[in-house]
Amino acid sequence: MDYTHFLRQQCYINGKWCDADNGATINVSDPGKGKVLGTAPNMGQVETERAIDAAEAALPAWRAKTAGERAKIMRRFFDLMIANQDALGELLSREQGKPFSEAKGEIAYSASFIEWFAEEGKRAYGEVVPSHAADRRIVTLKQGIGVVAAITPWNFPSAMIGRKLGPALAAGCTMVLKPASATPYSALALAVLADEAGVPAGVFNVVTGSARAIGGELTRNPKVRKLTFTGSTEIGVQLLRECADTVKKVSMELGGNAPFIVFDDADVEAAVEGAIVSKFRNCGQTCVCTNRFYVQDAVYDEFVTKLAARAKAMPIGYGMDEGVVIGPLIDMAAVEKVEEHLEDALSGGATLLTGGKRHTLGGSFYEPTVVANVKADMKLAREETFGPLAGVIRFKDEAEAIALANDTEFGLAAYFYARDLGRVWRVAEALGAGIVGINTGLISTEVAPFGGVKQSGLGREGSRHGIDDYMEIKYLCMGIL
Ligand SMILES: NC(=O)C1=CN([C@@H]2O[C@H](COP(=O)(O)OP(=O)(O)OC[C@H]3O[C@@H](n4cnc5c(N)ncnc54)[C@H](OP(=O)(O)O)[C@@H]3O)[C@@H](O)[C@H]2O)C=CC1
Ligand SMILES: O=C(O)CCCC(=O)O
Image (cartoon, rainbow, N blue to C red):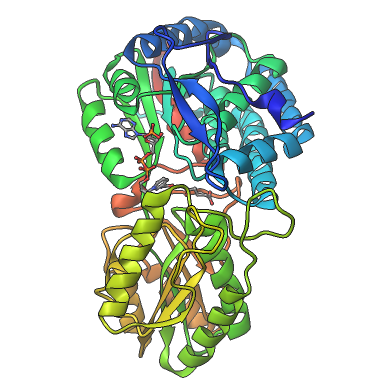
């Protein structure tokens, strides 16, 4: 199947493909070539309300199915995603810019949440609680929360949906999704496959367009019982406020500022490998990407020299070109943010080791960049860069590294390399993050709980815990007179 089969330029509401009521559209561009790929409907409040009504109407029948019946449909959905991995990967690469190999990996990652939660739905056990009274019995049930609203970002246009849709469907919930305006096609492609898999009309709805109008309705409408969001902390905070009026359950997967610590007992080669993966995946545009490196005195020079050499050798190009590992940034605003952070570091005395400029391909291509002699108060260490810029800070001892790593309002991922077992436990326990990568730069999998502490978010996605965010516990107290 060709990728164009999945390139739908209409929204999906109540099992039907539709335009905005007023026919308005937004352009969707390929960030690599800068060329318009197509359009998507510019919907607003009215269409969103219609989608919520459809999700509400579809809820009783979807909820009434057994978990096993839902799992069969979800299994078909998973199989279709895998069978169409190449086409879905190409569509994703074209709208987002990431290398085709990474895009295909993202499709498999996205599908893995559908498969995982299809099975977890069957294990959403309640419990029998030892009673407090001889004449009463206590039982708990877990029930799907109802209509779920999801708002997702452009950096993982498929996987951030898969990991919300999987648990929602498995729990017996229905969903209205608003994907990022930059990358709506991967979301609409999921609607094509959901339909083919037999997900009933109204269970999964996709609306594209005005973030404010659609988001406003999703947060205001009392029929929506849960909002799940991945994106910036700034918008997450705004959505939390908006959800307060109708007391919705919320999951927030927000910004990060991940530290990556290399201790003097680390395997430096392995640390460089992990650093490359963790820093430059998706051109530095993931919330778990390393944002600041801390390297101990004794191994500092070796680490920065090797990191710079590896970064310099990374092939840059269009996502669909053979062998590319670094694609374009999502837009020029992203390039400007990298430039601002680099300029701030260099003007404060940091040393440029490689990169440091826009790539000759033009547009939003930027060279993988490494700077040494970075200080902890520079912008690149304090704010999420979300780009291919690695700044390396020197430290003396374990206590200093932990203090530096934890000196942030964020707490999503943290990484460190060390071999001393005592140190591994001490540091792992001391880091203020929801996810800690130890001697690895890659922590993402559907089987583990993904989520942050502090201003990086609320709730966990993936793992056996991920379905709980889509369920309520009901307690039954039974008199047995
Ligand atoms: N945690 C993460 O994974 C991500 C973090 N980020 C961080 O955020 C920065 C900015 O990226 P950006 O794309 O602007 O992220 P945003 O948080 O603005 O966007 C994420 C999603 O929220 C939507 N949105 C934006 N404003 C509103 C609103 N008022 N009400 C409801 N929904 C809204 C967007 O829609 P639309 O696309 O239509 O604007 C998109 O679907 C990045 O540089 C990065 O630092 C970004 C993406 C993912
Ligand atoms: O940046 C994000 O929000 C998505 C994280 C990707 C992952 O699950 O690894």
